[in-house]
Image 1 (cartoon, chains in turn brown, purple):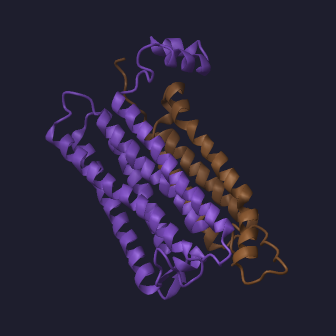
Image 2: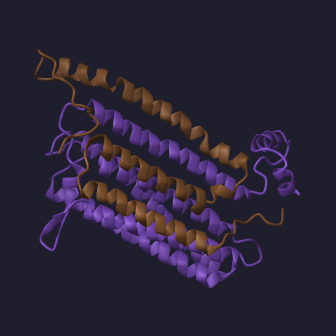
Image 3: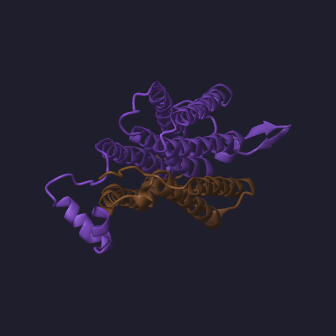
Amino acid sequence: MAEVGQQHPIKVYFLVWALLFVFSIASYLVDFFAFEGHLRWFLIVVFMLLKAGFIVAVFMHMKWERPTLITAILVPPLVLIVLMYLLAYEADYAWASRIVYFGDVVEPIPEPPPSHAAVPH
Amino acid sequence: MAEAAETDQGPLTTIVNDWSSDVTTFKAVPWGKAMMWIFLLSDTFIFTSFLVSYMAVRMTQTDAWPEPSEVFSLEAFGVPVPLLLIAIMTFILITSSGTMAMAVNMGYRKRKVAVFWLMFATALLGASFVGMQAFEWTKLIGDEGVRAWQNPMGAAQFGSFFFMITGFHGLHVSAGVVYLLIVAFRVLRGKYDNTSFEIVEITGLYWHFVDLVWVFIFAFFYLW
């Protein structure tokens, strides 16, 4: 138990630091060049997950921890995906109900946008 | 010994053995670090609940949601640049994460003057982040007329979620700056000379988490 610390070569930190800059610039460029639709969302999520993964794995040293700590911390948040799924699943219904009961237009019910999560430019 | 045992058993065996060992579960982890991780886990649930409720509201909203790319654009050299301030804030937070990682590394080398200056630099970057956020809020409240209950550009909930999510994150950054400064000065005073510098790593965990939350806010609130 003498070695409880997390000591790693500085090179690893510099590499991840540089990667975080690259991914941030890349995700900024997604907005700058105004990518649309699924490509936009896909790229945003990919760069977000890459950044988050590198921060947790290297800067927060998760990569070198025992599997007991890794699973205790990283498994519980997975239930949040269920919450997200449930609310996204119900969204069409809630949106349509608002149009029907609170909207100015009662008939006909307008088509929902391709994905109402996004507002077109 | 623990290291040797780990190599000839799979991760699942390690997990089962650790949880059923009748002693410390998180072996080779200082208790302060385990507690910080558990605190961060609870914070993950808070921030994710904010972001998920933001998603639910934005998806079910019948009014137009303002275009963040335009709302948060700034003029630079006479040209409007989308999300300019947010991009600068993102880079500042990443830079501060890097200096914090360096501070942790120097801590384990017991180079306390280096630790102090790196943590001090991290705190300064964090403070400048909060300053920019204050500027952003001022612009949004004063120039654009956005309030927590109304928004001239469309859906009223835009204001509520913007102020709640970025405000809660800004609060974390502000608390982190205070936390960093306290630990940095204690390191310099020699409080941890005879013990371990793991407190620097624990502070670092909190700071990296603040950066981690910003990654998600940046993606879902500003870019989406």
